[in-house]
Length: 235
Ligand SMILES: [Zn+2]
Image (tube, rainbow, N blue to C red):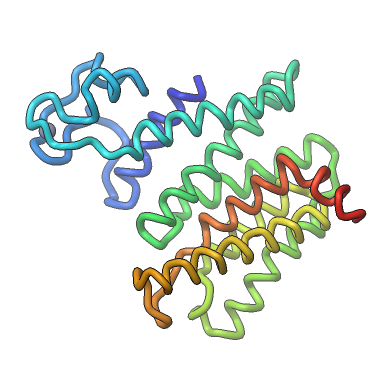
């Protein structure tokens, strides 16, 4: 089911930024060949087709199998965390699935559509609310951290999407020390990648680097390993 949600996620990632409807059959973006049911089977079809369109033989992006496999992984994580409560599995799975889609869409387009961000924030709040975790302070820290930068730089340093995303991550993690760890990991990993890209001359000093993927990476690290990492350094 998680892998199928990844397949659906790929549809959303392709169509939402282009403003297209979600209904209708999937086509090859090059030759417009309508995909038959067996060409839509997640992961399998990519391997059987040898990463190429059956009609025009042009390559299919690796994004498709990677997002499908990653979605399978996050739903599996949700399953192990929340079983036997199926609603809790679904809620956490959807939160992590949206985080995954947000990271990919921001990396590709440097914007986070509200259609991903707002549902993530609402589901993260719902999850912590149902679990009875006091999430408000962590949510305000996440949002406030970016809102203050946004206000100070008049929207030049960070996008408004980062504010909503960080609020959602705060609500999901629900603990002050975990949201702080997530922000720290996001900045360290972002800085490492920025230095690497500058040295490889892939980016210039003045060019922008989407921050969403790093925030999502920080959130995942804090969510999966936060307690262990903080325990190791005695926090
Ligand atoms: Zn084709």
